[in-house]
Image (tube, rainbow, N blue to C red; front, side, top):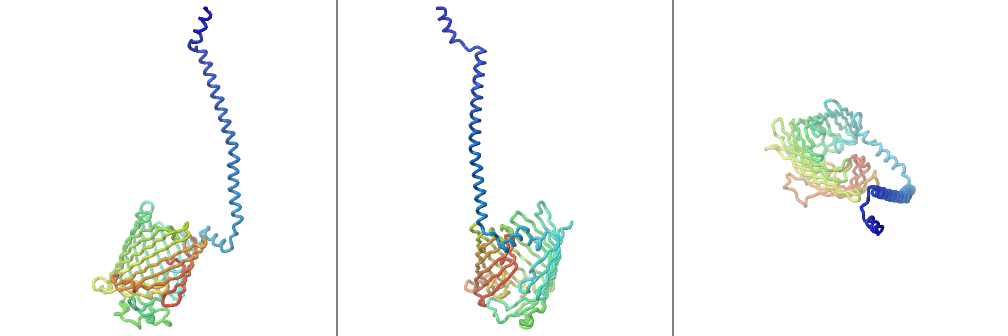
Amino acid sequence: MSDRTSSSPRSALPVTGAGRGRGRRAARLALLLTTLFAGTSRQAAAQEAEPTRAAEAEAVRRAKAEALADAPPPNKVERAFGFVESSRLLSRIFNPPRGWFAQIGGVGEGNGFTLGGGYRQPTPAGVLTLRGLGSIRRSHLFEVELTRAFLPREAGFVTGRVQRRHEAAQRFYGQGPDSEFDDKTSFGLSATLVDATAGVHVTRWLTGSAGVGYANPDIKESSESSSVPPTQGAYDDLSAPGLFFQPEYVTSHVEVAIDTRNAGNPRRGGLYQAQLRRFDDREGGAYSFADMRIELQHYIPFWNLSRVLALRALAQHADGLGQAQVPFYVMPTLGGARTLRGYERQRFRDRSLLLLSAEYRYEVNPFLMTAVFYDAGQVAPDWSDFALKDMRDNYGFGLRFGSSNAVAFRADLAFGGEDSVRFIFGFASSF
């Protein structure tokens, strides 16, 4: 009995220290075995998955190689354009940060093929740029410019400029929207311009600037006087104010611009700017005037930027101060490669101007775009005189050669003007 009595309570007694030690060792052994088994299972699964991931990567590489093998090799023209784009050759030739550069155009439309260049050098006082251009029609431009940046992140800037220019083939058909094509005349215009401008990039897209300057315009004989009658012999000071007397001016201007366009050849965003200029006649005040210009550009992209709807609206008005007159040679004009393309350059001239343009641009390849365009506009003595029925318009299509950074060459065919068709060639975008 004593054996049964002693055995039964023994099974119910608490575990002693030795028993607890054996239990912990057993638990640890079980945990270790479980961890080893789980790790071995994960390793086996990873080893099984690794060939699968490698196979997928290899399949992707093979697919890319097959796609490249199936694509036609680039031709000589594409390889040449590709080299120009990747090497930034155009920027290095025409707009380097320092050193010599070339320039095509820049004197003014109608002055013939213009070619020249200059030199740019950073100095302790700012970036100094010297420029000289000449054309086959005896037009020229010489310019010295110094620009200095200041404020954090170069948000502020000051620019001083001295320029001497001569445009040898300006056109004048008379003033007003109803001027006759047969009244075409030509004159030359020279001027020395001095200007100092200060501005601030308030944000990445907002810039404000203001400046003062000096100008002394001078009417000259036209370089095409042998084929087009001179303005001086066909008009007087009543029909062409300022024809026989050009005063010296003290100038001032203020401008605000919002620019959200992508850099280079714009395909999205917009440019919205307003400018007010004042010209004070220093020799009696008979030709003092103010000029306001508002321009809006907006770009709507489609299909990953390969299609673009480009829109432009331009309004400008020049008004005499007090009883003063606006000289005819500074009045806004319509017609030419960048405004009303179906009409000859400077075809319409008056104190007020309105222009609307639209282009649908289609990328053929990275170096060529086609465009379909429409322009409509008119001039009048005042903005209040504009009428929809008096709008002149034209349409056409063209090609733009270049890259994402710039348009290097443009060729347009315009219809709907006074000629059955007009061929337009240029070295910059229409807008």
